[in-house]
Image (cartoon, rainbow, N blue to C red; front, side):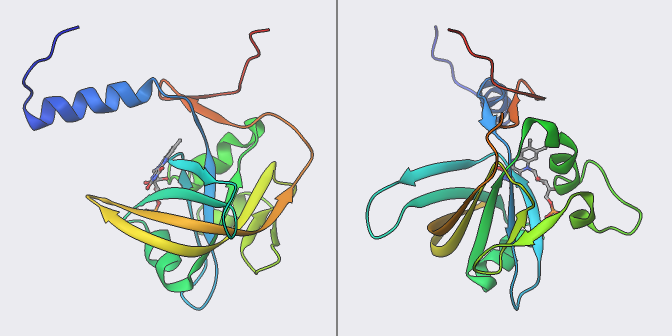
Length: 173
Ligand SMILES: Cc1cc2nc3c(=O)[nH]c(=O)nc-3n(C[C@H](O)[C@H](O)[C@H](O)COP(=O)(O)O)c2cc1C
């Protein structure tokens, strides 16, 4: 291993290449309220803590995404963990697939969670959050959600994104 000087562009490219080797769960982060209903595909999601006043999680959403502004103004969001069978839902909420009517939400069935946030019907898991804190780092908003309610659907495999493609977890034992 060598430590080299990089131009910003080269470092960015290496960063993206390094991150392509990470395996991430794919989620659709949704929000509903006075600021409207929006959703976006997000792999930058992490548990923060199960303890404290309530459990907390983190999602990172690009500032240009309509969902970012809506989350800030609605003060609530839900994190839907996609199933391995839901790659097309991910593609719709990432803008890779588009319906003629432009309605991303029409790509699957929805239920309103207990605080009114959109849950995918039968989701592997959906976390209903109140927005506790946010910070802008470069291009992205970091949203910390306090989990208020949780929906757990039938067990199954989560959708994974790694090496710039979708997959599912494989057991090694
Ligand atoms: C697998 C996958 C993971 C993604 N993860 C993120 C993410 O963590 N944060 C983010 O802001 N965008 C992420 N994106 C990109 C957004 O989903 C994409 O830019 C989307 O079109 C933004 O929608 P909008 O501009 O219509 O709101 C991801 C896309 C894919 C396919």
